[in-house]
Image 1: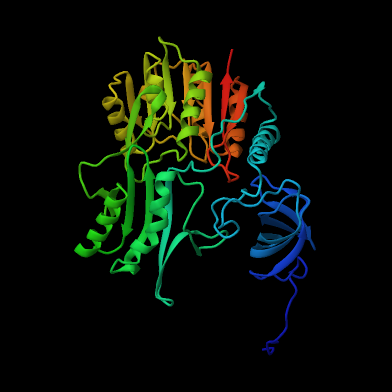
Image 2: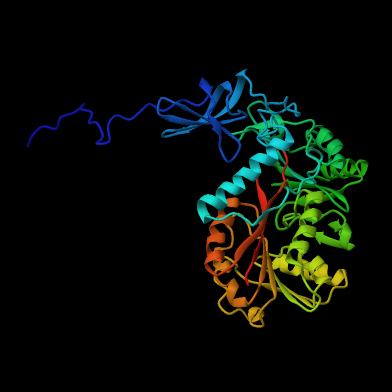
Length: 450
C-alpha cells in the first residue's frame, strides 16, 4: 500500500479564497450611493460594503460588524468628508443603539428615501407605477413610539445588570437613559427603570421589560424564576409612582397584578376603544395609525349597502371603523386569540354587523364558507411575508376595489404582479411613515378592476 502523503494543501477549484475581514477592523471608504435600507454602499478590493450611518458622497471610517464572502457589514465611526444632507444625530446614543439607523438624515430626506424604495420595488418587480402617487402619511418625527421592548441581561463576570436597547449589528446592550422616539409618558419610566431593576434580589432571573402607552400606561416584566414578595413590592411601588399597570410574565401568558386592569387604545375619530394584551400586535405610532385608517377608508370608499372583507384583521383596527360605514364586515385572522379579541372589541363598541373567523392566510382560501357570498371591496394588512396565496383568489370573490396595506415593499410588489394578472389596476400608492428615524417602509396601495 502506498504511504499517504501528508502536509499537502490543495487549492479549491474556484481559485484561492480571499481572507475574511475581521470584525472590529476599521477601514476608510468612499460611499457611492445609498442602499434601499438606508445604509451607505462602498466598493473596495472586490468587496461591497454596507455602512450604517453613512451618506452618498461621504468619506468615512467604518468599523466591520461582520463579513460574508464579498459582502461586508459595517458602521460609521468617523466622517472625514460630510454630505450636505447630513445633520447632527438628535439622539446621544446614535451609532451605538441599533434602533434609529437614518436619524442623520433630515426627516424630509428620510421620506424621499422611503418613497424611492417603494417606487423602485413596484417598477423593478411588478413593472408598474400607480396612476397617482399619494403624499406621504406622516406625523411627528420624535415622541411617537407608544410601545418598546427593553433588553435586560445579567453580566455574571462584571456582576452588573445591563438594561437598554440592542446595539447595532450585535447582541450587546446599550444603556439608555433617554429615547427621543418614545412617547412622553414612557420617558420617565425608561430613565428610572435600570435603577429599579438593580434593586431586585435575582437580577439573573430577569428576561426583558416591555413598556406600553395607550388608554393606560403599563410595564411588563418577563422573569424566569418566581419573584419574591419584596421584589413584587418594589415593582408595585415603581408602577404606582408612575401611575402604570404592572404585568408579570413568568410561566404561561402575561398577567396583570390587578385582574381588573385592561390595556387598550382609542381610535378617536370613530369613538372606538380597542382592548389588547401584551403579545398582541399593535401599531406603535398612534397618530400615523389613525391617519392610515382614515386614508384606507377614503380610498376603499365603502358604501352603506356593501359587504366588505378585512383580511389579517388583528384586533379590528380596520374592521371596526369599516363596520360603521357598511352593511357587513367579514374579518379574518390567522391567530385564534386575536380573533376572539377582535370579536370582543366589536361587541364592546356595540358593533353587531361584524363576523370574525380564524383561517391560515398563508394558504389558499379554498372556498371558505365565509367567502361564498362575495364582497364589494377587500382590505388586507398582511405581515412582512405578504399575502400571495390570498391574492391569487381575490378576483373570484368579486371585489372591484382592494386596499393593500404593506409593511414590506418587496412582497407588495410581488403580490402586485398577481393582482395585475387578475385584471386589477394600481390606482394609487404611497408610503406610511410609521417609523421615523428608521429605513422601515410601510405603504398603502389601491387596486381597482373595471
